[in-house]
Image (cartoon, rainbow, N blue to C red; front, side):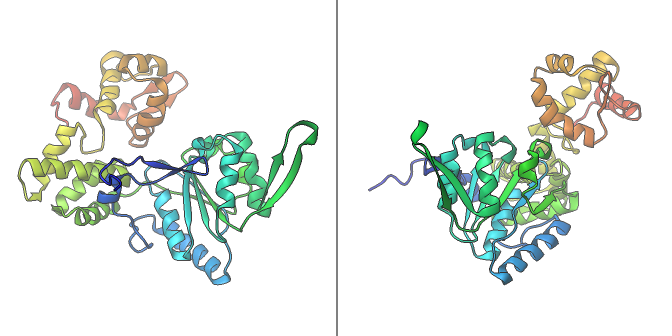
Length: 347
């Protein structure tokens, strides 16, 4: 008999390309909405997608190709799975960087059933030669295949079933103009409000069989940087903390201590976020300072600083970019002075 206890990889190989699948932990602990009613937040976007999917279903046609963009962790994949569920069609989920050869894309396109959805995450990182195969596939539902080499090479048009491409990206500016123009629907996902994240935390706590107070759920929401994925991760760690401490209910006090243990403050600032701000205060009186200098001082590469930490600090108003470098806005200096060098408490 096969060993069913063996760990599974977070991807499977189909037709020589990689298709993402949920890890066992995600399957066990993540609540995956099946309808827009179960999906909390993004109300304006949900109304649009509901109209688009029902209209396509009523006509019996494939949904228009769609580009979803926004920061990571906001639910682009989940929304695509809900749309597939509403339309009663299959969905293939794959990652742009993993499709290195044109044959990878041709294989998956030829395996799609009529009206199926192909979801490509990080589509802006797809190689150019692979991306070009999408052009005729999206417009005319066919792909061109080169058979043979040299003078004997022939081009064959392979028809494929009408399908919907949903491309997801965190950097919409890197989508090429020819590809962008072929998407009939382009929508942005915004960061979540604390109240919306609180509902998501409570919803997932039920799925985890975890009793949690509304105050604790709101504290987690405020520490989640406006991102459901982060809220779910923090919730699982709070559950671990409560379980080890033998607490039956995740109270606000337990959550407070757990977040401090994780190095996350009430505004969602991590230890690295606080280190960036503290070093700017301590060594440069708030700045400005160049990105490379700050990177060396923190011990993180500048790309990580620019893509992981800076966006949230900018959004919270703790950091600003100037021609001379990064600096802390003057109105934030007194608060941070008190936080780091007066009464130094994270939470």
